[in-house]
Length: 250
Image 1 (cartoon, rainbow, N blue to C red):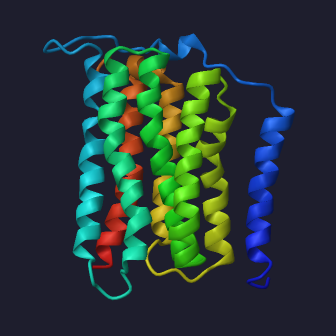
Image 2: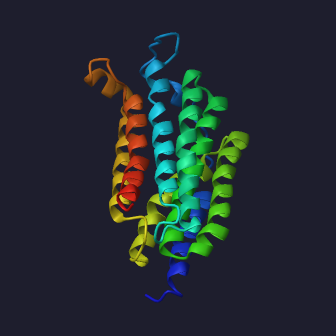
């Protein structure tokens, strides 16, 4: 497939999926039952201790990723263009920590917004980083990064205003489709490897699985850890997989 056609294929798939979601799927409201988590235990004066404190790894992983990027300054192919979208990704990851902890301290739709907002920055930052690495650095940084971050922020704001999750769902799941497409069509990358992406996606899938079986996991583990607490730990390991593979290139 020629380099001229490839962007049209990726763009067509993205627009097609977005159109299908917005045209054929009715608005999706946030179920209030979403806030009913299995582990409600308080400890050390912290409500919902497990779900609150399990967000600390996001901060640690985000800062570690930024440290890895700082070490690459002036190193080989590690240009400022390469680091900027990855920095957005790791900043988003780090901010998930306090945002999600704030939400789990007092779960409701208002606090959930601050959990989801930095996640959209992380999702879109990683997609922009792959575009920068595989397609074109200038397009990735000057066009894709600001547009994708804006779309991500819009998705969280739109949900908060309208109680319609469709745009947020697109922002969360489109990268899962588009990132492998880009990496397959543009096979030669400098920084982001298949090992990083597969690791991130595997841990993301484990996070979604344990989130779904929140109470069942809590019962299976003898009331020690809930599925949602494990979800946070698995979700933090996804960006850690990216950071570790980047560090291996130093």
